[in-house]
Image (cartoon, rainbow, N blue to C red; front, side, top):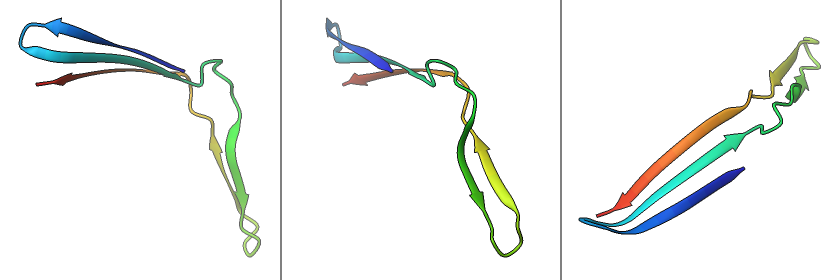
Length: 61
């Protein structure tokens, strides 16, 4: 999920963009990828990443 807004009319900055992102919004737990190696019988599993928040700020000069 993400949302953003661009601010215009700030002195010395033509455009300022602020964006927020959230990954794994419901904080689901589980495995994103599970694979096996048929030769050795080993398996590899990667868990789903936990909920994470990101904030990005960018500006045009």
